[in-house]
Amino acid sequence: MKLTRRHFAALSLSALPGLAMAQAAHPFPAPGRRPWAEAVPRLGIALMGGENEADRLARFDGYRALLEKTFEIPVRVYPAGDYAGVMQAFAAKQVEIASLGSAAYAGAWIDTRGGVEPLVVPVQEDGSTGYLAVMVARADSGIADLAAMRGRSLAWADPNSTSGYLMPRASLRRQGVDPERYFSRTGFAGGHEQAVIAVLQKQYDACCTWASGQGDEAQGFTRGNLRAMVEKGMLSMSDLRIVWRSEPIVTGPITVRTDLPDSLKQDLLAFFLALPAAYPEIYRQISRGEGAGYVRARHADYQIFIDLRREEAAARRRRE
Image (cartoon, rainbow, N blue to C red; front, side, top):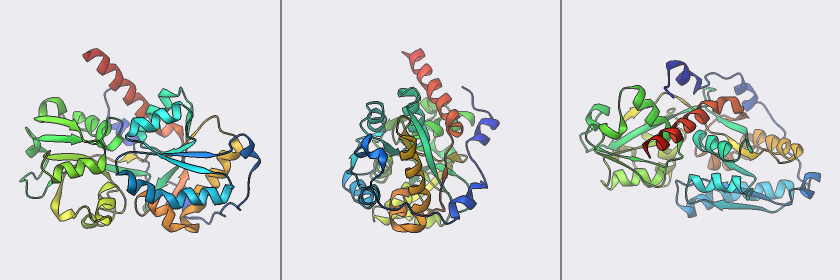
């Protein structure tokens, strides 16, 4: 699939009218066991890879406890080793909910034959639901732009990552850059956090990761992997230089299984729409930084990623 300007324009939703909905006051669901609990007696939350397990569990514990308190059923979190693990957990119906990147959502939708659906998507402060893939190199590397990356090594985050693999490859190809020929070597670091660490430790010259692209760059922007690593004391932005940025990408959704009771989906929708105002710190932890809340997500906004994944799979088969 050859991406055109029209395709890239479709990847970002700017100035959404839904911002008003994200900022409006939504009543938080009253605590109590729901009738749907007879069919779904516990909730399983899959946690994406890309961050060490201890930090993931700590960040999501308040969220887990709040779901448990609100709906009065057991809630368990399942940290996956990589993105594929979350997609497989959905396919096996081992979990009910997860926050997915756009490419991972597309992969889960394909693998489950439509067995997952998007519930809500985070909104940026300016009303958009987009974010960026960024390529970062060490500040002392002498690499200032994409041209200087010719013949250098590049780390991808994960084969199922939107910003760490799928979209950078598509964007670079659109710019006339063939990743297989342009870089001396590429490889998978095992996640976004691991990719940045690999660059800092000089295992790769640069890597691709994700950032909101809004706010103070010196603090890692408002949201994203860079911001999270700065806040954890793992990174100083002065040690890195951003050498390339993608066009805006539609942020991945919080995703649920399609076969869940509609009443459960509506309760979860109410939970997320009210969460930022009612429990701002929990919202901040699970969204990896600042933001303006959530709006209802639409499957149609992720069709481009489904098409891209199918084309990537077809290209692999042709190479084999």
